[in-house]
Image (cartoon, rainbow, N blue to C red; front, side, top):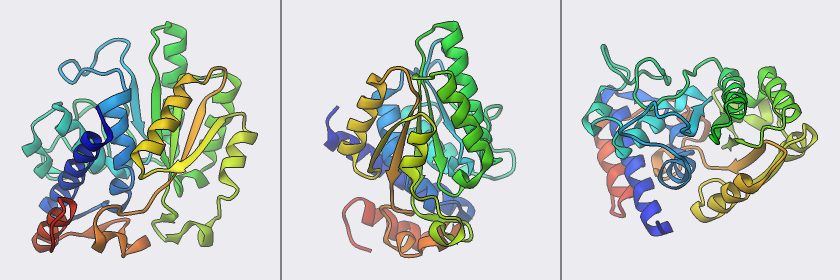
Length: 274
């Protein structure tokens, strides 16, 4: 699959995200849009999965530790065929299988429940360790947030993963520079982030997380790495791909989306005008 095909897939994911959030009127759109390229590459190219058999033994696992980005994960799962795309319009509504935060007991294709920030990262470490013990060749991929990276649990998990030499664990930081209450650098600065992960014994890559080609190369390199877990620090734009969301900066962590804004966004994503 070439990058043009992957780019087209990523566009449809963004359409799915804005449509599903519009269906309920508001939601976590900014941090969902910023991780689209990572999800596109994982699900369309790199992960060993079977949508027809979501519980397949030996499959690769994905954990969205920044659980509020559930709309992005659901958008990808629907596009991959885990469930009908029409179900995206039930997001966070009564009786839905698509709650605001990912729930492995509700949604086909979700490998780990998330929501309490930091917890998903620890679960991903456990999943990777379990695969090592089973010797089934499976990898675990995990996305954490930059605001989430202020949690001590992230660094406890990082220490243990390096100690266990979990080279089947690849973690991504969605470094979009904003959290719920404002800019990361003003609330609790993470810099130097890449150096911190290196100091914890991880193999580290730093890339433009919204560039498919550069991110793809980092994932390929991380998969080839042995003896250490890998961290890919993704410099991303919160709300990437939709102008009115991007321009809100920190204000797009969770925001309302009207039908008019949805229609405008869909046109923008597909190359048209509002």
